[in-house]
Amino acid sequence: MNFSLQDFRRKWSCRGYMSAGAAMVTAALGMSLVLVGTAEARKFAAPLDIFGIGTPRPRGAVHSAKKISPQIPLPRPRPDEAPRGSDKTEPEIPAAEGKPSPDKAPAEKPSEPSTAERQPAEPKVSACRLALTEEIAIAPSIPDIRGPGGCGGDDLVRLEAIVLPDKRKVAVKPAAILRCTMASAIADWVRSDMVPLAASLGSTISDLDNFDSFECRGRNRIVGAMLSEHGKANALDVRSLKLANGQSIGLTDRAVSREVRERVLHSVCSRFTTVLGPGSDWYHEDHIHLDLAQRRNDYRICQWNVWDPLPHVAPLLPAERPEEAPPREVAAKSDKAKDGAKDGVKDGAEKDGAEEGDAAVAADKPSPDAKPSPPPRKGATKKRR
Image (cartoon, rainbow, N blue to C red; front, top):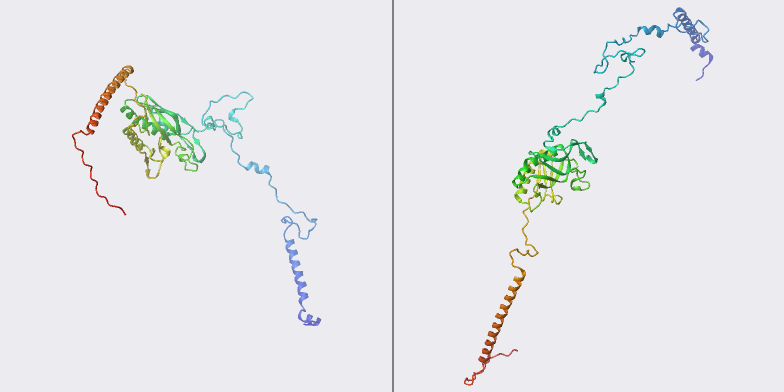
């Protein structure tokens, strides 16, 4: 497309005049708006005052802190008759001259904690610990044990002896570290069941043989097994009960009466949740395991076979010479007499034998009057082919 000056003027003849007029109108309108306001009301410099040589910009009033501070409410001073922060009120002591009174101490200093707050709170005593008094057992409390793998426990005691109703003591050798509940169950078992058993045998209990109590280990001492109740201080292994007359009741000894061992079996299975003995496994062939393990639905385990007593076997050595036996010299003389009598009997027998032999020889000789007997006939025989 070709454009010429004539065409431009013909198409855009008023364009330039209209642009110039609009610019002038805009400038005049802007100046009028700027000059309308007063100088006092202006908060900004003039639009054309680039270098700041015009009238300075008025600034608003500055609020000083001195004028505002009296308006802020301050806390009232602490009255002299006000009590102190601590609960215990102390008698007021007149302040010495030149020294400030303790009531007028600066507010920034915190109050010192009382003696009761400094001391740690004492652990609560369990109901078992209150019930297990020295009239029942000598069992001092020991600190809680926290071992690896969940070993240990709380509310632990060291069972040293069991006090019988007649004030006699049954020593636990060695002393057993148990939970209070387990120690209380052992003491009740000995006092209620074993004392009558010993009385039926004509004596009383003096010692309790502790085979094992607290030990941080797995079941049956197998590495990697579940934690044993011994590791929780909730089990006791008993091997025997010793009586005051020197007799010992071995719970797994087959030489002990079967009736006695069965009475012990019934008593422990009715009191403890786990009883393991001979017949359960070969780990418990020489002692009885007792614990109070908690299981679902109060499940109990009682595995203890009371074997029959061993048969009496004849001794291999000869029996001792009885006291009523005669002395050895007399016995030797009697033996010689017996030997002489035997020799006489032998001589008579020999004589009788000789006579009988002569008679037999005489009978074998034929008499002169006797006829010779014919020779015996031989039976016919067949030839073998």
